[in-house]
Image (cartoon, rainbow over all chains, first blue to last red; front, side, top):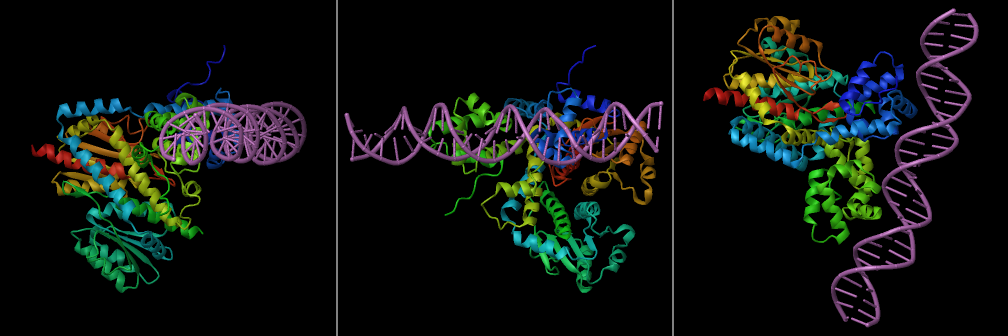
Length: 275
Length: 275
DNA sequence: TTCCAGATGGAATTTTTGTTCCATTTCTGG
DNA sequence: CCAGAAATGGAACAAAAATTCCATCTGGAA
């Protein structure tokens, strides 16, 4: 029987690719998995750029398109683009959505919107006002660190735990001080000259965090502080301080800007070390 | 004074165009209005196709781009594409775009800016597209939960650990599954009907998280999933799913939108319970 | 009405992009 | 271990794209 022809929408294409996972040649499989993981890349990239990112030859992309029954890469790309076209909600749809939400008189929706607004505000403010020199110096402080200690409790713990994850991915040796079993002091006991530490704390500053910062200082560890004010007790102990003013909503501070800095620090340190 | 350079994101571009509405030549105004009305067309079309649709000469599009300070149509188009793309352009791409401007811009600075851009994009996108009904149902699912179990490992752990902190502040009984000492299964062992669970997972989905989600389901626990795709293995197990598409930069996904949802959920549940 | 600066249309040019082709390598079945 | 077939890489090619250039047109000031 004649071929059904290639899938005409993204969902069908996904299924098709998944179904043929077994009987595709190695390089084409590589492309298939790249494509499903980075659909936006396929939608916007050029054959050359995608090939480079997926670590494949341009011709392989064309072969892949043919294998799925398309006339060329361009046709395949069209499927990936249509997916993005469909997804964007029109202005009217959004209005309708808001109307429905208002009628229901939901308080929860307002809460969510409040936190999203706080996050957006924090981020755009930081973009405007951060001194890039300070960030540069912060990176410079961490780069030579033998081991990087990550200190942050309570509200700040998500930040340090994320940094620990990211640094692990990037092969940066680090120790996450989590205060487990009340052993924060012991965990920090191995800090020594040649190491570096990141201490994260916001008002009201956890007493234990402050103590650990002072301790690090005494041991000759280079100290980077992420905090909310120059008057913060950890600011005075630090060699470099990044001041982050997060917006808050209903008593809870956003963490969006701080998390972005945490990620950027990790990646920038890895980048500088790779040079 | 020197030019500030052209807008680097869609929102800024919109403002710029609106601001200069008066002093643009007729044909350029025609393009401006077409562009704002059909942003997708600009993102995906070619100079020729857009020119035909907007009833304009191709060269006018290039002139329009120049008038706004871009080097060519390609650069302008990139702004329209970034609106749809969930990936922030890499430093190399950005460098290419900034050709001629502050070449002094440090590499680390670009990294930070990239993560901030990703965070901002994630947040504003979520604001646009989240279905408030879904959020409402998510809150409704958690409110009656006797104890709320928080499941999220690796990259998602910062999210659940923050929720645990916030819920603690708000007197919401919760158990944070942290997988400490390999005891995740045991920690989750007390889940029972009448409880609720939040499971957070993004590709590549940690096998243990998926197993815990299935386990929760079997035990009759109401399950809320925060994940990145309807195809996610935890989506099918969940009673309610919130789909979050975070932008990524240099291979790391932003967590800004997810963290905002985490905070909002905690506060909204507390609010509803207080009623 | 005449002049001129700026705007416009459209062809020519340059650059980029997708595709094809073929020599070389890597698998597979006997 | 050896054909033969399939897959792969990379350069060459063709097609399509963006951009530039310049002759023509338009609208306003003198």
